[in-house]
Length: 213
Length: 241
Image (cartoon, rainbow over all chains, first blue to last red):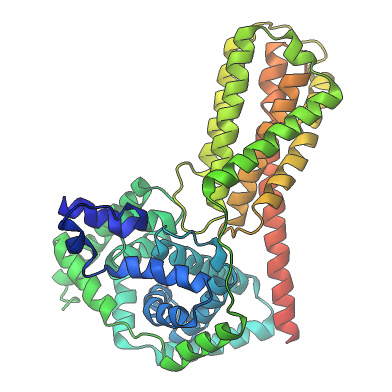
């Protein structure tokens, strides 16, 4: 009973059904995911305190998502701001009761892809020079642990990297990752499996050559 | 190295990543504050799906009413019992998927490509089973007329469908365009099935079914062009700034 109720609570607020003394066990303490859904509903009602709370709680995860996708810290900051502006613009598309985390990640993903597309199109000389100088500053400003996680995930294709980030770094469930990436649970499992096979090979090779501490 | 060890490495390095600066978060909060007002969430998914389905049905019926229900009148009971329920089912699935495309973080049961494949395959199977007249008279000239008739009705159906869910937000606009086109294409096939009295197997299999991929392709192309234009526009603005 316990695990089943916990899964339901994580995925759908409407499934918070229980009987007798079990209720207290389910609702206390409230899971952070459930809090997100409540905060989102309050955000839609125009509650500024809920927005501030959401910004404080979601931003570190989204920032990490952008950093892992090989963005510099400055880029990650820009993408984060852009994501919040987009979230604010389309906040009415969140459906109360649905999991909020995949909704946030789906929009963050859109912003990242859109940013990438624009940067690919921008090939004019002046812009290119500007980007190069920005990149140089960004590389200089990167922290060591960013590089190590980046180096760890570098052999993976982008689609596998984002799945691993969501599953293992952000701690999302398979269902949530599937929703965020507009794919099926099977496809997410397959990507994660392939990514782990590759990571294992890479880590073993590094371990043998003494590259991984 | 075991999976659990990889998990630990990922978690440790992930946790060590720096968070956003407090100033950035304050800036975000401040930029949101002035325009913060209550918003009305989208209607329930079933309501939007039903709306899309009704648009599809209305376009099909209106198109056939204008051109005549000659096809429907010529059909026997088995043909009516197989073709129209299949169209209804496919239109409901396409409508539901279109709603999912317009709501970020929705659960996707069928991918847009699979939906197009499934729709075309089901129609081909039903038509191949029902129509056994293998003659071909004026295959191209008559076929093109049917294809254009179907497509001409698919366009308003897709546009009306988009109008209904325009408050949504497509994180993948090309996929949303493809699904909207598929839905419109099914409305176009509906018009043809109600109107076209030509029951030659090759005609129905090729020209009637082709409305769906044609309309889906057009939907995806329009969405891609709009996205490209929007991207170019914002790029120009950036350069000007």
